[in-house]
Amino acid sequence: MMQQYIEDRIIELAYYTIETKATVRETAMKYGISKSTVHKDLQDRLPYVNKQLYLAVHEILMKNKSERHIRGGLATRQKYRGIAEAV
Image (tube, rainbow, N blue to C red; front, side, top):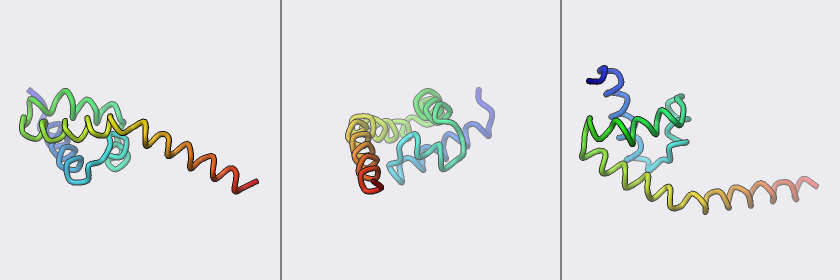
């Protein structure tokens, strides 16, 4: 049995993730909590709180996971373009 404020936080994180299709990192920054807390809430605790929400969130998280190498490559490219422009 979870404390009520934890369940409320989990549901709020789930709705935010679904509405914005945010990554774990983006969600953590928005709510000022750690990535590990967001991940634990959405992956481990959410199925016990609301199975329907979990299925929707899980789909988004798996999509984000499959695209993360692309986002990382774009960030690196942007970083080095910025360095080249500064020189």
